[in-house]
Amino acid sequence: MQPCECRRAEQEALTAARLQRLSNLGPLSESRLSAEESKCDPSVTACSFADATDDEPGWLLLTGVAGSGRTRLSAEMANRRIADGRAALYFVAADLLDRLRSAMNAPTGGDFSYALLFEHVRDAPFLILDDLDCISPTDWAREKLFQLLNHRRNSGRRTVLVAETADLSAIGLQSFLTLDVVRLELGATARGARYREFGGMTEEVLSQYTFDSFREQGLGGHGDAENLPRAKLAMIEWTERPAGWLTLIGGTGVGKTHLAAAAANDRLAVGDSVCFAVVPELLDALRASYRDDGEASFEATFEWLKQVDILVLDDLGAHQATEWANEKLYQLCASRYLRRAPTLITTNVAPESLDPRLASRLMDSQRGTVLYVKAKDYRTDQPAMVVNQPRRRSQRRG
Image (cartoon, one colour):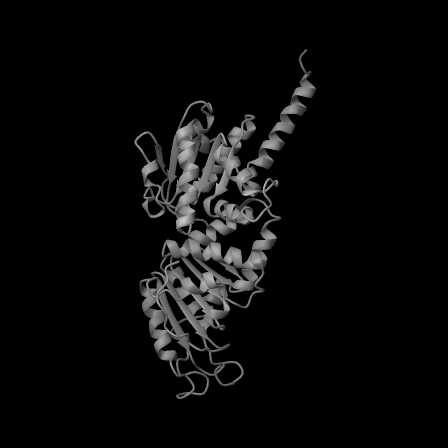
C-alpha cells in the first residue's frame, strides 16, 4: 500500500514542521538565499556540504569578518536540509553553553535535563555551532565543547563550525581543525546602513554633538567641573584610535552622553559603523524583535550589535535588572570584550551595583579605561552626585 499524493504532501509538511521546530533556528527558519546567490561561491561549496549524505563524515569551518554573512549562510545550510526532510540543529555557541548550565539544575530525567540536552546536541546528524570564538573561555566551557566535538569527530557526525577567524586556540579547539576539515572563508563585510540608534539619538541629533561644543568648564564656569577637561581629552584620544572599552562613570547631567555622542559622531564621519543605544530602550527593542521577521528579528539585531565597529551603551544600570536583561547584556558585552571590540559605556551607578559579570569586565584595566566624571548637573545646577571609586583590587580576567 502506498499513500496517495495528498497524504504524502501532508506527511512531508508535518515532517518539515517538526524538523523546523527541533532545529533551534527560530527567526532564521525563514532565512534563504536567492537563486542567484546560491549559484555563486562560496555558497555553492556550503550548499554542497549541506546536501551530502549523513553517512559521509565531514566537517566545515566557516569564517569571515563581521557582517560577511556567516550566520545567513549557516541558516541556508540548515534550511536546505529541512526542506529535504533531513534534520539540522543550529546553536549559537554561547547560547548552547547557557542552556547546558541551566539544564544542570533540572530534575534528572526531565525533558530539559542536562544529559538529554547534551545527548541531543552530541548525536545530531548535522550540527552548526555559530559564533564559536565569542564564548567566555572558562575551563567548564572549554571542557564541554571539547567533549561535544570529540564525540562528534569520533562518531563521524557532520559538523559546521562558524567563527570570525580560523584560530580557535583560545578556546582549546584548534586540534579539531585537521587537514580534512573543509575551510570556507567569506569575503569582506556586506555593510548596510552604517548607523543605528535605540532611544532617540538619530543621526541628525548625533551630528549636533561635537567635542568643540562640549563645555569642559561645566555649567557655572571654573570650579564646577573637577575633571571634565581630562575626561574630554581621554575621549578625544580614544576616538582617534578606538580600542577596547572606555567607561564614563558620573552623576546625571555631567556631560557623559555628550562626550560619547561626540565620539560616535567622529567615528561615523570616518566610515565606521556605529550604534548609539540607551540601554533600557535597547532591551525593549530586543524584546519586541522576538515577534518580528527578517532584518528586525532578534537574531539579526543581536548579531549586528555584536559586530558593529563602535557600540555606545548609554545609561547602563538604568534598566530593570531582570534575569533576561542581565543575561542579554552579559552575552553582548562578553562577545565584544573577548574580541576587544571598541565599546563606549556611560553609567551613573557604582560598578558594584551592576551585574558582577559586567562589573568585572568593565573594571579590567587590560581591556579598557574607566573615568570618574565630577561636575555639576548641566540641566539643574545641582551639585555633582558622588559615585565612589571602588578600592583597587587584584585584576580579574573575564
